[in-house]
Length: 385
Image: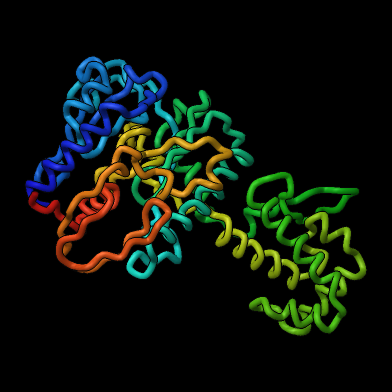
């Protein structure tokens, strides 16, 4: 990015902040603040600032017009202290980060920006299921990061004092780290006998049990020949084991519905393990562990602009997530009111504002939102006027 482009973007980001609607996080005066200015290279972080140092945040951002804006997940006695040990840590939000570049099965080189963001929204919804159902967290804030994914801030009082190790255990649960079949099963004593059954009361055991019941219903709708063939699609289940499982299902369906993994012998245990593996693969949320375990993390400010895309870091209500389209709904209205001229080294196709725009190499006249988007992503420079 050349100097002319940086100065143009700095000026326009400042214009945005003069009328931006910014909402401070809870206990904003106890948090550390940081920003990255429009310097060459664009990676120099200015941090260890408090609101007392910054003053009025809106005025500060309009004056400095930074490339990126952050606040700390942690709360401190002295957030402006230059050394972390001197800040006086008082607790921290539990923060989750989902990044499209890190999603399993997503190849950034072969996937469009819009497709990556759609895949990341699916991962976000899976994560929220864990946080709301498994952990029963209620104080949640969901934010589109402005870049490649989403942030979730958990602000329940119960999480604020957790150390890094406790937060890592939450990460391991959400990502099903080291989960095996034994972790899905518990032993129950009934009438002098013991049974190994799925943990159906919640967690990964319940998820596996729900998937098992769905599969059992599928088998019950089939004749024996088709059901045997269906069972043999699972690795390790041959004709003999398939007949054993199906026989147990036909004789004692309630036992399997109750999660009794021994009702159908070793074949059923193998089936449960395989279904459990599939459930894990389909339902885990690929969160970024270092973000969640870092009790001093800086995170993007909702309402600010992402300097690598020019999109608005957008806070979302729970019922807005499903219909939210980042490349349409996070485009700053401030940048949709005029055209500008940009220079491209290579042809590019841009999906933005609900439209697809094809541009050729050289000078192009485009809506400013498209030009700013391309410049912040390093795909264009501001043309001389």
